[in-house]
Amino acid sequence: MRKGKSTKKAETRKNISQEVQTIVNRIGEFSEQSPEERIAKLPEIVQAVRSLPLLEAETALVDAARKWQVAILPILESLTSDIEYAPVAAEAMGFIRSEAVVPILRNLDRAELPKTIVKSARRALHRLKSYGIAVEETQEAPRPTLALAGGRRIIRSVMSNIDGSGGQILSILFSAPLSGTEAVEMVADDIGGIRDLAGARITKRAYDEHIASDADRTFVFVDAPAPYILFRGREYEAITVAQGKPLPIEYQFYRDLFRTPGRNYERSIVYEEVNAEEISSEPSLVKRAGELFETPAFRSWLIAEEDIQLHATKLIEAEESPLILSETSQRERIERIFQTAMDEIFTPEVRARYKRRIEENAYVLLKTGYSDLARVAVACALELALEDLPSHDAHFARALVERSIGVYIAAQGRKPRIYRV
Picture (cartoon, helix red, strand yellow):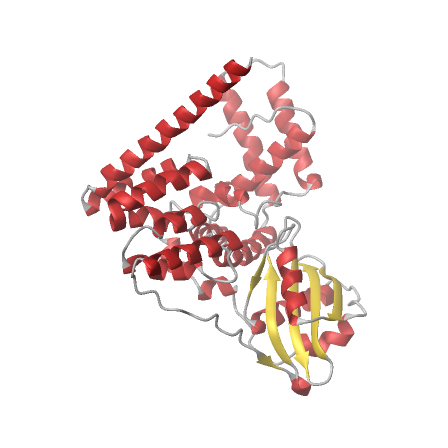
């Protein structure tokens, strides 16, 4: 028995080694191609690397970096937009003896990115420095502060992604001349407004640790300009009032903070970071809507059970119907169920709400290393804003409805069978 297990493990290691060597050889072929051929082959090579487990991917990339140096930099740079594979791409860059990799690694050495990415980037920069590559030492820029009434200043302002129910957390750390540093956090959603609010005295170090620990759980936190956080707070206050709901008692203590005179943003802050016109001109981006649900920012997104139940039940009945239909007729019947679901759920009001939710999460993606998928999210938001586009033709609406129906059916103990036309 033991001999058999050992043989099996040896075969596994051999297979993995062969797979790694195959990828390395493909990268070598890529490095010798013309610029035009590289552009065409780049997505295919990047996907091949992503098919490897992380450890094997790192082995392949480091081996390739040592052999072909800066010629494989496009592959590594593309992988830096993948939060899972960015650390191994950074490690491999440390073996490319060229100043061309320094700005890329510097961009990965940012406090708002996951620690695994930052550590890999710093190790790579240190290795380059030992090779004699000019690596300028940089100091973390101090966070900008915002002056408030009474001598108070905002030291740090943070927002979370929006979860599946439209909920979001806004958090602010500010200082006062006599009371030291204090934090206030608002939990709100875009339907009912402010759900809860709490404030407490806290040290800057403890606050940073608090934000970092929360980022490991349901919500993903990113730093955002203080004027925008305050503006979002005022938006949630307006929603609460419009719903005829009382504001939390604790909010009265911080009302003047959120009402600090400042900028009213006409649209989400993500548009100050990306080019909306350029993104809208890339029709292929919206076709990747389903990839958004693989990220922490969108992972909890599902349509409420009470809104999806009727449509899921119709789908189950259609699949289990004793009526004998041709495969084409069955597909058409199921497609009609999906289209009806999308049109009934994604009304103009709901589309506007989801558009803003997606935009907020696009900013979170952008600041957490998912720059490529941030563009996908913005493209989906812009598509939902097209008034002449039926909801059943909106790629994000379809992706979310299919995901929600699939989860609902699975929860009922049935195997989900989602038909696509």
